[in-house]
Image 1 (spheres, rainbow, N blue to C red):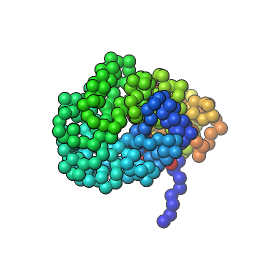
Image 2: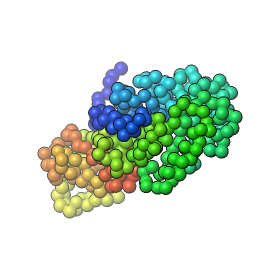
Image 3: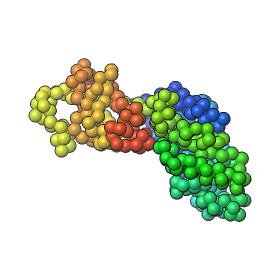
Image 4: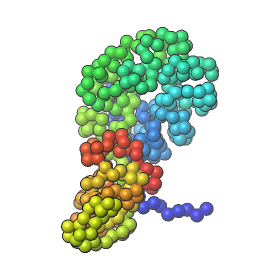
Length: 344
């Protein structure tokens, strides 16, 4: 089989920053241990790149959303360390969980019955304390289907941890009230932002996601979290366009004078959405403004500040998540998870 050449776009992952972020979050979790949300291909940065780094840094607990995500993680960590947040909707999924050893997170009375009827075993349990997504209701805690479960980790999820909202304390109280009602071995409430809310929210295990991969979920975390992902792309074309010529679809930019421009092999198919218009790429600390609209797999940049650049040279897109979110209007979560699959 003929091996294709490497792509002319790449997503550089700072593995030292990734490991350092997790260690910082583990330290900030106090007496609790930090796990890591690894769903959505480690927030778009790649299971094969990220999970071994997190494992070697000391992470024991990994959380995914779908059963289809288990196999990728199980290539790097024991399956019993993997929790599936969406739970077993069917007996087939319950059987798969037991076969591979992954832990289901039970989210409803129906799922509790499916898990027990299919053979039971250790599981986790989600209780909805106010976010009104997944999880049994507090008043369902005494249901026989819930009481029959062998709950390893009793969980809930904060809705407003990234804000100074009274809802945080309301959810904390609701979670504390439920703890003595359901037999369990450990408890977990805090996500990335929840870790910064303090020790009352930590319990036995925290579940950071965004901050592991370089996102700043709350200002208190800024000094501890480093950028992990660095999108880079090669210049496919370099040319000088005369004054009055336009660039891109709908002639969104018109050159006020002769400009040296470059076309970068990156676009919205790679997760660099049109919201990046008006932003810039960088080379050697110099800004290269984006001209016109972002195309599916091409972006034109102004090379005035880096006249020496030629076809084949590489430029980078500033991807410090808080600043990128402010520019694009996208959330830090979206900026990570929309990244495409053509990066090398």
